[in-house]
Image 1 (tube, rainbow, N blue to C red):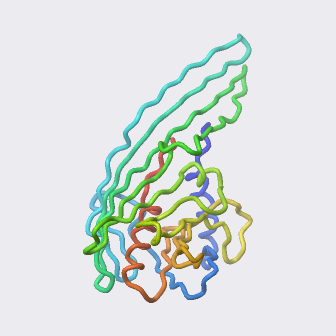
Image 2 (cartoon, helix red, strand yellow; image 1 turned 180 degrees about the vertical axis):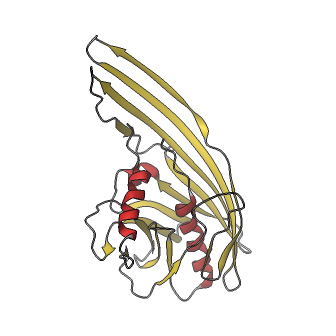
Image 3 (cartoon, rainbow, N blue to C red; image 1 turned 135 degrees about the vertical axis):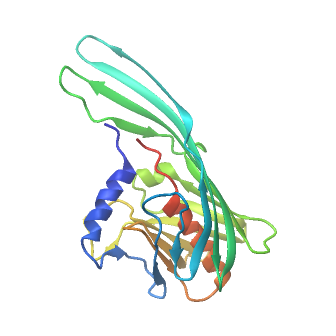
Length: 249
């Protein structure tokens, strides 16, 4: 069977949710936690809310892509190699009485290969090979803020996230002087035995953690109290990470 990071994460999240106080551990006590509503369940007329933020619409495309497979057998065991390319798109608008508005356009892309080895009665666990540096295995988003001349460009490496990368997996960039890094969060409070990412944190160019998003349960967004424009930007980026679709079967 294929390995599925997101399904595994769902099981971990279910386990963590059994502890009511379990949450990601980010090294900035000034961040305020905002539980998110509307990320689960039916996606028809989906509305996501947290704090005084609310989506005006969330529009998704169906997954687009292709699959190919070939293999051979020596009579005792067989080997099958499959490849797939998938892509989906999403747009949403986010608004807040205090932070203004944003509009987000996202493309999520995957390119991978899968290896299957089967014997007479045994099927070995399939191993998934990712192309780490491929532009076809990344999440891209453009985030338009009120009155902005150009959008912020967001990019997250899906392969590194699925391989439990601890650290830098993406960036949010306006220009060479204005950018944030996206890093995975593995630590939780209370401490968990899990070693897979259960959230992401956003750091400014000085290395200060200025926001975060937890993937546990429906999600929680962490924001600073000040700088409303920055809060809108990071809230939009957090929703990209919460709402992007799971590609893997």
